[in-house]
Amino acid sequence: MPKSFSWGIQELDELYGPVPGGYVILIEGLPGTGKTAFSLQLATANALQGDKVLYILTNEDAGKLLKVAESIGLDLKELINKKLINIISLPMINDTSIVDFLSKSIMERVIGGAKIVIIDSITPLVKILRDYGMKRSFLHTALYQVFKQEDLLLVLIADTLSYYDEDVKLLEYIADIVIELSASIYGEKSIVRKLVVKKFRGKTVNVYKLFIGFTNTGIKILSYVSNRIAEKILTRRKPVEVECSAARKIFGSRLLPGTQILIHFKGPVSGARNFIKYVQKLIEKSVALQGYNCALISFTTRTLVKIDDLYKESSEFIREHVLEEKKALGDKLLIYRLDPGLSSGEDLLTFEREIVVSKDVGIVVIHGLEKFVQVYGEEAIDIHVPYILNVLRRLGTIGIRVFVSPVETIRPPRAYYLWCDLTIEVYPGKDGEYMIKSIKGIESVEVKDSMFKECIEKNTI
Image (tube, rainbow, N blue to C red; front, top):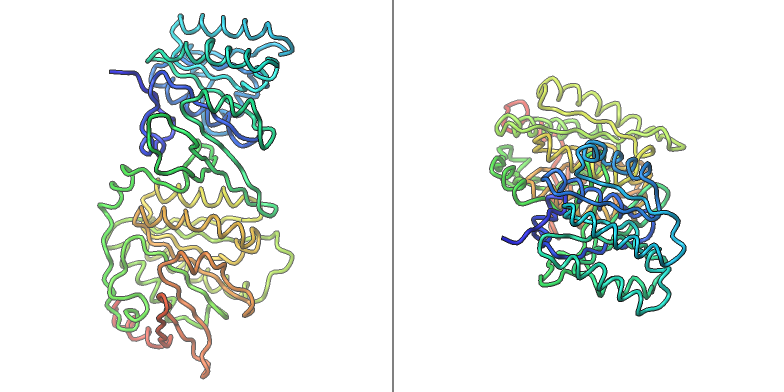
């Protein structure tokens, strides 16, 4: 059977299949987009399976490579000690003789059993070969033809330093697989990282663009969840019957796994005590019936210039209910407090995805959503929201996001209205009593807060 290699990321192995032996992968992108981290994860995953890796550095020293590996939770030192990964740092690249040295070094290691060779970066090597014919000869003859053997893999890392780079275009032509990594910054805090499959020889690629995140346990695909993980989790997810007549008008007769809900308070949260108490009881019922955990994520920040009185009042009221919920759910309630002013939007969304997957979380409740939006801005939110909500749907995890507006002009970003399955607006009615309004598409239904009181008293949840 022909040799194949793992991408080092489970979701990529599932989406695209393993990398065939004899292939050349080009990983391209601007400096700082994660090309080295990506290649290290690939190298480590295969080295752990017994495939020897030769890692050739042309821009950095081995010390910096070890730091990159450590930042994403990879133990490179152990694999080096076991001689599964061998690192070569090339001397100053300033004349063409280095190309002959490189070709010789690669052949020696391949003969010695190396199955994967990574050149980080190929860019300076190609640049010193000024003649197009020399570049093509080096890439095609000295590298490409060697790795056409079925049991070898060549990974080239290239810096795209300009919009149109002839050297990169030549590398794209030679490569069997082309992966582009990019990072866009929105505002001061939010980074959106993307992985794009530009080419995969011999295969039709259905998913071209993926959002990725960097964590201390590796690179994660944020916009996709492995079928194996999803199916394992979904088998334990069941609909929750809604018995309360008032609640049925808001939620429907059943709360389905994966339902994404936005609750928008247009005034003090304490004005809807009965509704909040009912939601709390509905969560308790769901956890008791299905045995999964509930995660409560509170966004709190001291980095904002002004803390509105409404926010303070809402936070104090919610804190009381958190204590009640903790008493009712015990260890089934996982509480996290995060400061969006101290972390990137990417970090926070990666965190949400990871706790759902690793902690068997069936319901996620997020308070302080307005603070998250205030720090990162609507543009970044509009990009992040669709893929994190779709991941929760795929995992059958119910998401409840709570947004408090101090004034009418401050509203949740449109992405929440577009991508949530159910929007619930909570506001003071004309008679002073709070109204609960459910919006489903073009339809809307209003229910008074007091209508939930009888359901709570009779335990008709």
